[in-house]
Image (cartoon, rainbow, N blue to C red; front, side, top):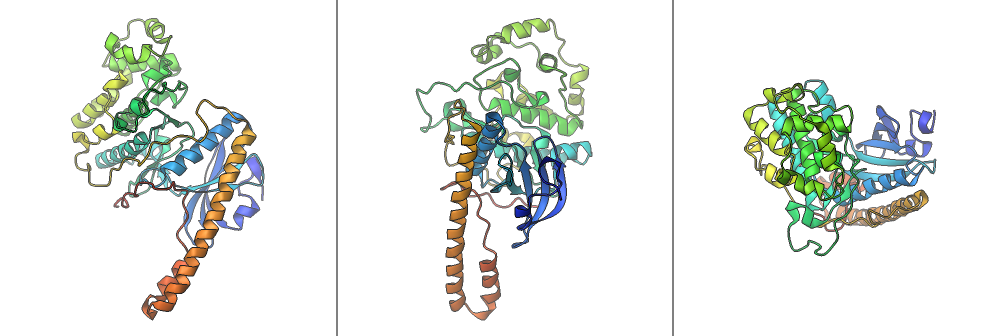
Length: 419
């Protein structure tokens, strides 16, 4: 049995609690297994994050993902963070999530999607983004591989390692009294999102942007689901920008205004492209495959001007999704999320590790206290209930509900997505 990067099984301390059922994937940043918890029989995805605390950048990304998933827990279309555990190595970390059977990238490659699947997956992604954006959070790395799927077409967004907070007034779904008037716009990095799904304002180096970056990615994903392959496959940032302009046409001054105000390179980058031919070109032939309603929504999401792209809340009302609109709960988050460590603050890797270890210890203490309360309630109810309820009550005491890393006062979870 190996350990660390060369091993195919978790640490012995983890194996005491979980049975490994299947290796799901392995890469430079970690390894993921399908596991079964021995006490409860529940199935989870167990991820070992390699070198999570090797340097401050990786440690910050690990910390941010845990915080965001903790705060966003409860939505049916966002992967749930179930637990975080120490690894034997002080540089690694175990994170436990919902088990999901596949992801959208594999479904596209396998040619498994029918038109109804495309509509329903788009609906669920937008429903999750409505919730995420209303919390003042930008995902910034939406792509098919980060949309997990089950065989009943239930989708959950995952991987919040590149997510960031944005001011509420930058987000159309949060223009309310909770906006922080007078705050300076946060400076955001432009190097986010896999290139093929990167919005033009990111390609042009904008340092202030809003939910439009995620909405552009949704347009790329929708087009890819229909075309069966990525629709804008640039070989470099400049080649990607050229493919974007082939689709949208050269932007007008009005379209450029939201971008050039925060990017000193935008104009020169566009000028260096020269004359770019708009549709139809080989890069946008996917449009020929799109049904009219899908084409309209896709092109609305792929507007060069981020201010002209619909919000997730508005896109949910598009006629392309009318058969699903309001058929499930479509909640807003109950609060605007703020990180306990400011976005622009960079701590040492050991500081992020200590913060996470403290959270783990606090969560373990809460779990023990809640388990004790459940046990006392169970014993009390057993004395009062009739014999026909005894077996079910005893079972609930032996197997209490899992303690998710929920924030206090969160929005009620939407009902289970129907099969």
